[in-house]
Length: 85
Image 1 (cartoon, rainbow, N blue to C red):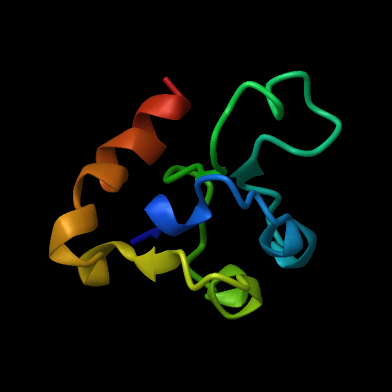
Image 2 (cartoon, helix red, strand yellow; image 1 turned 180 degrees about the vertical axis):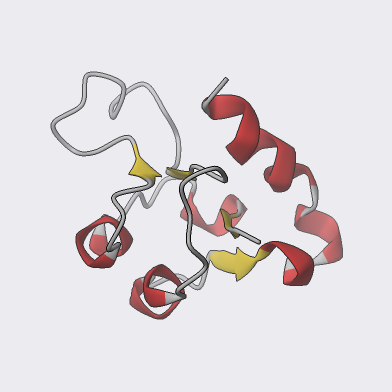
């Protein structure tokens, strides 16, 4: 399972989640050229270990376990995965 960043991150891009991730699976980082071009952050589903550290660090409650993503936010499961293709 993975965590998914949903629409609440759009326009916020607070990187508190990046700072606490033990496997460095949240992108783009602030120093990445893609940071300014993206409206929110993404979790790599192939690297996420489902530890939950990012979820509790998110100040806008935008991160959910994949099987708990709210009904109106389901598209973000694919959006997160597609970022890494």
